[in-house]
Image (cartoon, rainbow, N blue to C red; front, side, top):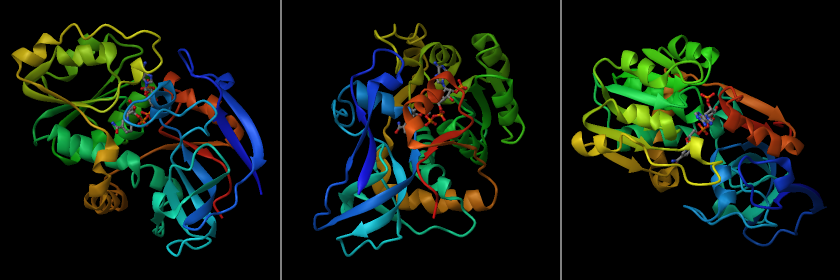
Length: 335
Ligand code: NDP
């Protein structure tokens, strides 16, 4: 069986380009006992991809010549393990390829719920939902009446963190790029205010939008946006360091935030977290996220780009903000 794959050719300098990857077509390996062959349906394109190809981090680096790492959802085609049968839906680190050959133990079987689109398993009911849920509730610990600020608020993780903030009784202010995204935040998602960092002075707009200061910051961006937030934090503020997307493409480390001393004087807590640490607790979050989803308390947008061939170009959308919600690549038909 012929496989189609994207291989990492070189470590990018700055923004990712298609020339950092190489398109390869070669036979899929034979199945060993305990393994399954998955036909990829959807691949989640995540900002973390940029971290994985830069070098070792919270996961080993993707090495030159390796299939590009990516979380995906697919159907079992063939299995040599009793836990999986052909036709089963699974998620896992399928990689940027049409067919993934993996140990069954590295895959999670999905019992698709009626009425829930399959893409939700790479969003609200997958790693994105878990990131927003545990990042906000476990690390940020918001209380009713507090002010929460979320950056990259119109994106996948940010839009869920902001809505979970509303469910928790917070005043929620989102920061996003452009009037369309900001309008979606204050309109359909019901946020209290939105700051358009591409068209407004962030410090001034944030001052207006947070008259009582900021108690919790769900930080997805870093850089100047984090700095503007630090200038407004209240005593005992919690800064949930989920991501620093404005830094991932930098060739040299950026200077630290100029308002860092506010962490000291306001007795604030900054805590980084990685969602994989919470996977053993996924069973706590998924039923709650599913319930909020069914009751319309969580809304989400998905942008599906078709074709494995387009993966490197599509990844770039996360960094210029042209993605409208969770960015997903469709590799094959759902059934
Ligand atoms: P998104 O759907 O939010 O897409 C990324 C968005 O980031 C873009 O749409 C853009 O929105 C914004 N952005 C990109 N570059 C910049 C910049 N220079 N300045 C300001 N905003 C920028 O992606 P995800 O929801 O998947 O990821 C969001 C964040 O969460 C990332 O930082 C990611 O690394 C992090 N993350 C962390 C996890 C963890 O375990 N800690 C797990 C998953 C994600 P706009 O149009 O508003 O500019």
